[in-house]
Amino acid sequence: MQKFPMTIEGEKALRTELQQLKTVERPKVIAAIAEAREHGDLKENAEYHAAREQQGFIEGRIQDIEGKLSNAQIIDIKTIPHTGKVIFGVTVTLINCDTDAEVVYRIVGDDEADIKQNRISVSSPIARALIGKEEGDTVVVQIPSGTVEYEIDIVKHV
Image (cartoon, rainbow, N blue to C red):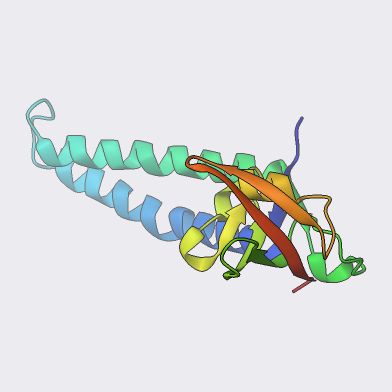
């Protein structure tokens, strides 16, 4: 079975969502289904069908999260010695060689990626280009509009 890398924060967020779904959302939907059944004919009961659809979504999400957590490889970057090498979980500062613009990314698991918070997936083109490189190295990243050249400035274990 393939393991999927995940940060401690990512695991905590999934466990929180799982707890919310099991203790709040699931009972709420079960109550809504019970109430809709009391209204009579289920064939033409839109409330019942909507509640059943919501229940299916919740149960599917619970299974999805449980599967991800069971196959997760939790990586605490703070416990790994700093070598200046780009690995999963690090925060890396890049300098665009053409524009001298600075950008900071944290390399995280697929479910944790959020470009608005500068968290990129380990399977993204930028992260794949960076993994294994060291501070001071120059990398060329393939993007839809061509290529971008970055210099790896700082690698932090935070």
